[in-house]
Structure formats: C-alpha cells, structure tokens
Image (cartoon, rainbow over all chains, first blue to last red; front, side, top):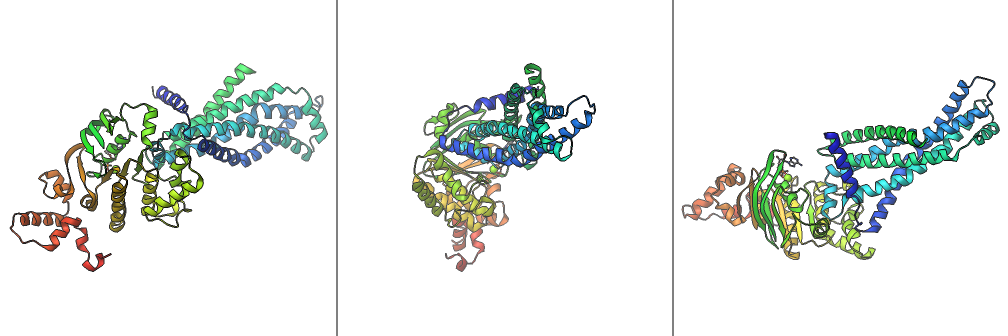
Length: 245
Length: 284
Ligand SMILES: Nc1ncnc2c1ncn2[C@@H]1O[C@H](COP(=O)(O)OP(=O)(O)OP(=O)(O)O)[C@@H](O)[C@H]1O
Ligand SMILES: [Mg+2]
C-alpha cells in the first residue's frame, strides 16, 4: 500500500512541476546554477572512474584472451563495446546517483527542514517547479554529456593501459576500435543516460522535498534517495536492454 | 482584515485546532499567545495555507483562501510576508540576496532600484554593513531582522511573525517588537504575531487571542488582560509569583485598598521585567 501511495505522490510531484514560471529569468539563473553544481561538481569523479574502468577492462580482456588465434585488435573491440554499452552509462550513473542524488536530496531536505521551502511557497512561488524543475533539466543536460565524456575517456584509458602495460600498441588499438563499430550502440547508451539522469534527479528530489522532521531525517532521505535511484537504474537498464537490444 | 471562521485541524487522529474563530484587524498587531505546543504555529500556517484546514474558512479581506484556485492563491501570497520561527533565510545567499530575492522574482525593476529598496528595508531593521554576509555568519537576532526585512521588502498587506523574539535577549526583543509595531502602523498592515513573551503581550498586544489546547480560550487587548477573570489565561500570563503579586496589588489598588504605587504602574505598563532594572539604566 505504502509503495503505491509513494508512487502516486511521486507522480503528483512531477505533475505539480508544470506551471508557468513566475519569472523566467530567475528560473534560467537557477538552471545555470544547477548545471554547474551537477555537471562541474561531478566532472572529476567521472574522469577518474572512466579512465580506470577503461584501463581495467583492457587489462582483464587481455588476460582472458589467451588464444593466439585471436588478433590483438579484439581487445580494443571488447573495451569499446563494454565501455559504450554498459560502463559509461550504467556504472557512471550509479556513481552519479551517489554523488548527485545525495547532493540534491540533502539540499532539498535541508531547505525543507529549515522552512526555506515554506518561505518560498509563502512568497507565492511554486517550489516544485522552481526547485525541482531546474534540477531535473540540469541533470538531463549535464549527465548525458558526462556519459559521453566517460565513453571517450574510458576508451582512452584502455588505450593507455594497453600501451603502457605492453599489451598492445596504440596503433593496433586504434585499428581495433574501427572494426565492427555500430553507431547504434552510442544512441542506445544515450537513451540510457537520459533515462538514468531523469531517475537520479527526480527520485532524489522527491525524497529530499518530502523530508519530514529534523536533520536526522535529511541523512535518511539521502540514503533512501541513493538506494532507490540505484535500484531503479539497474531495473531500467534491464528493461531497456530487453526492449532495444 | 483576516477572518478565521470555525477552523479545525488534526494531524492523524490528534486534534490540534478545535473550532477557532477570530478576526485579525488591519493596521494592528494581532497576537496569538499560548503555551508551547498549544497550536500557535499550526494556526498561523493554516492561515497562510501552508497547512490545509480540515474544516472552516480563512478570509483575507473578503477573499476565501480555503477554496481559492492555485493561481489566485499565488497572487494573494505575493501580498503576504512571513517571518518564520527559525528565520528560514536561504543559506546559499548573502543577506542582500536574501532580501532582494522577492524583488528579483516579482518585480521588473532595474538593479539600482532593487538595491535601493533593499538598503532601505535593511536600514529600517537597523542592519548595516551586513549586506555581503551569509546567514551562517550573523547572529540569531540579526537573522530575525533579515527575516523581517525580507518579509516587508515587497510592502505586504499581511505580515505573519512566528515568535519574532524567541531566543533573543529582552532588549533586542523589545527593539524587534517595536519595529514590527511601527511597520504595522506605517504601512497599515494586518500583522499576526505568535508569541509567549509577556513583554510583547503588554507592549504591542492590541488584539490578543489566547489558545489553550487548540481552543480559543480568551480574546481581548493588553488592557483587558490584566483584569481578566479567565483562570487558565491568568495561570499562563502570571506564571511567576512576582507577576501574580503585582497583579493582586493592582487589583487591590483598583478597589482603593492600597495606595497608588508608582512601581505598580510601571509593572502594568511595561510587563514587570523592566522593574528589575534601575531607573538610570533604562533612560535610553
Ligand atoms: N507537521 C506536523 N505533524 C504532526 N503534528 C504536528 C505538526 N506540526 C505541529 N504538530 C503538533 O501540533 C501541536 C501544536 O504545535 P505548534 O507548533 O503549533 O505549537 P506552538 O504553539 O507553535 O508551540 P511553540 O510555542 O513551542 O512554538 C504540537 O503538539 C505538535 O506536536
Ligand atoms: Mg511555534
């Protein structure tokens, strides 16, 4: 029962967001602010994760491909496909669920508990659209960009690990990258990125916005937001893979 | 004028407000008093629509908030200023940005004009040189004043203050009370104040509503309060022995049993606390 009322409340929150902005300029300013917070705020962690996950998948693929029958180019192919299809969108978004999700839930939870949301509401501002709308849009703009960056860096990380570890030369790697490349995979990854971006931002907004009680609840809401986002991301990942691939 | 008609509000099966009716007058400081947990904050939040009432009506100069469309409600709210119990300043913004925020959102003024108005109201609440500070860098009393400044920056018709002087020293409390009172008169605002501070009650209580366990127990002005016969109200107001004695003396004096005592006059006028100070200390 509680699950259904939570889903209902979540949908009502999304519906409540759609009203005419009181002042377009202020919404724009908030959108820019959130884009910087969400996008720039996670740039470093995404960079580091993608380089390493590319590197690790190159090394591991090399380790598993012991047969001399297979050309070295295969390593590049495998790294490319796993990074584009799974690592860049899903793994990065799981990490972002932690980084961005807890930030959003914490920020809104703090605003709720210290009555800042009430203060905005009392001024005659639709807090759902002013506080949550820009966060979701900012996530939809920046998270797919981060995912694309993660693809590039992940593949580059594989190349780096391959040449530094003496596994395969940069030229071989580059050649491998071009074999059997399906641009469709990139589109698929982007569909995932947009879906996950929406899940992360809306779910953590929902839990932060609806915090009741004191500061203890803010921490609890952040945790719930991150866990719920992660589960929904994995679930959506499966559904999308099932229907699109 | 704000009319409250038969308002009821429960959380779960816990009844908080029980059939409350009252009128908040324009150009006056209307006080809601009562012990901690008596429902003052809930009543005020019902009045502005942050809580939906279960039953009853809240009428702002003829406009009924309870059955208002969302858009009309937003419009009405632009005429409402509110000071929250915990100030509720936006902690990512400086004092200046906090006060300027309603102007940014709801006016098309140029930057210059906005800053002028901001400095205007900040001077009004006697805050200078704090423009660039963040809420975490100023004291509790200053936060309250910033809260008031933000609440009045759009020249509201209705001003709500939830315990404007809780946690403040008596002197600062007095300054804030006076400030709210002056603003009310100056702009002819309908002001509603929640408080359990007896100094405020005596000082600025023009129209007082006493809540007891979510019910309206008594209403009147600060003049009526001294001679009231309501047992619960007396227990609340004259909680200290000192004040009880003072009240008894005043009653006896009214009946001509004791002589007029200069100090007693003072207690009645200033709510007792000032009596504890020397006369010299008080001359400002
Ligand atoms: N959101 C809420 N959910 C459930 N109960 C609440 C809520 N807000 C207030 N209450 C209950 O309503 C009652 C009245 O609370 P309220 O905050 O109005 O008291 P108050 O008169 O403002 O007290 P104080 O002087 O301490 O501020 C309390 O018993 C409180 O537990
Ligand atoms: Mg209260």
